[in-house]
Image: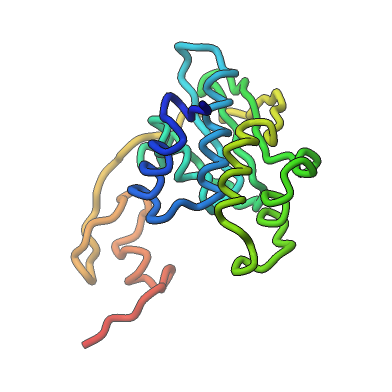
Length: 193
């Protein structure tokens, strides 16, 4: 039986659906990537993770590790590659895991899905999930890496300021009497009356 971080395949699928809303193939493969990382890394050290994709992989990391976007231990670099790097937060030493397309020849349903060789509605999802389960970590490659850790520590928190226009709070370190929305720097919505 193939396990993902101590969960059976079925238990992990349930966790994925509960968190992500659907049993996405990328999230299942991401689970095998996290599982392999945990097996490869020295025990008892503190790791941060850099994820190279905004799709699926960050959720696998958040489901299976204490690393999250909210606590800052998971960072996303919008590279667009199906890869993640676990690294020691103090030394920068770690490993990068990626879906190795050279290894997909033995698993045609995964290759068709991943490289979008067939439209989604023509793919057999049962065969795809069976293929992912069979492949487990056999389609993942690992590289040793060293992440550049900034010499200066990031300051936490800081003074909170109230905007002179909307009266909402924002980080005082921005040095303005207006938040970024009221100053026009960020404008992703407009108020509706």
